[in-house]
Length: 332
Image 1 (cartoon, one colour):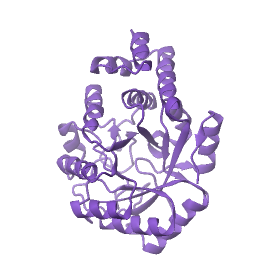
Image 2 (tube, rainbow, N blue to C red):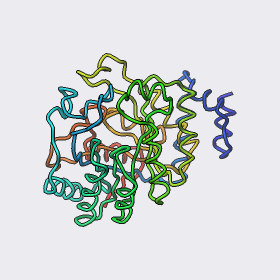
Image 3 (cartoon, helix red, strand yellow):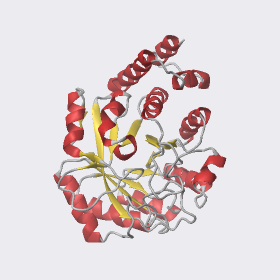
C-alpha cells in the first residue's frame, strides 16, 4: 500500500487525504526511509540548493494578553527565554544585519512581538534594504495593517510570514487565548493580495489531529503567493503553562516535512533550528526541507534565544551538514 502511494507521488499524481494519512501513520523504519527518499528526490529535482536564514529579533514586548500558553519569547514568560524586555534600536538592528551579511548568510528574518501595527517591521525592512543585499523575511504574525503591508511592499520586502500554527479553532484558542485566527488569516490574505511572497506554517503538537494537519496544508493553497511553509514542532519552555506538555516527536515532524514536500513540490519548506534541535538539522534535510532558519554565525553581536527553544543552529556546523549530504548551501 505504501509503495503504491509513494510511486504515485513520484509520478507527480495528486494524493488523497486518506493516502496522506497512510503516510503519516507509517511506523516501519524501512517504509519511513522510502518516504524520505521520495521527498528528497522531489526536492532535488527542483534544486539541491539549501537556503539559510538568520534572524534579528526586534522586540519581545508583545501586547498579546493573555499570553500564548507555549510562548517563551515574550518578556517575563520563561527564565530560559528572553525574560527581560527589549526593543532593538536602529543601531542594534544595523550591526546585526552587517554581521549576517559579513557571514555570507543570504537571508534575514526580522521578527518580533505584537502591538505595533507593523511599524517595527517597516522600520527594520528599511534598515536592511538600505544597508545590505540580504533577502528579507518579516515575521510579526498578524500584527500588520493594510498600510504596513503596502509599506513593506514599497520597500521591496521579499517575504512576509504569518504562521496560522493550527486551523483547528478549538486548539488555537485554547493555546492562544489572546490571539485571533481570523486576524492571522486576514494578514495572509493581505500579503497575498499585495503580491508579496507568503510564508505560513504549522506548529505541531498543540493538540491538533493528523487530519487537522493535512487539512491545514490543503488550506494554505488558498493563498496565491504562498512560497514557504515552516514546519515547527512544539517544544516546552520552562515557566509557561505548557512547560510539562510533551515535546512533539522528531520523527513526526519529519513525516510532516516529507508529506509537505510531496503536496507542494516547489515550495520552500523551512525547519527552524530551535524547534527541530540544532543537532537534528541533518534529518530535516533528509526528509525534504530546503531552508534552515535561525542560523547564527559566530560574529553575531547580540544574544539570541530561539523561538520555540532557546537553542539555535551555528552557521559553520550547519554548512558542514549541508555539504556532507552533497547539497549546496546558498551563500552571498
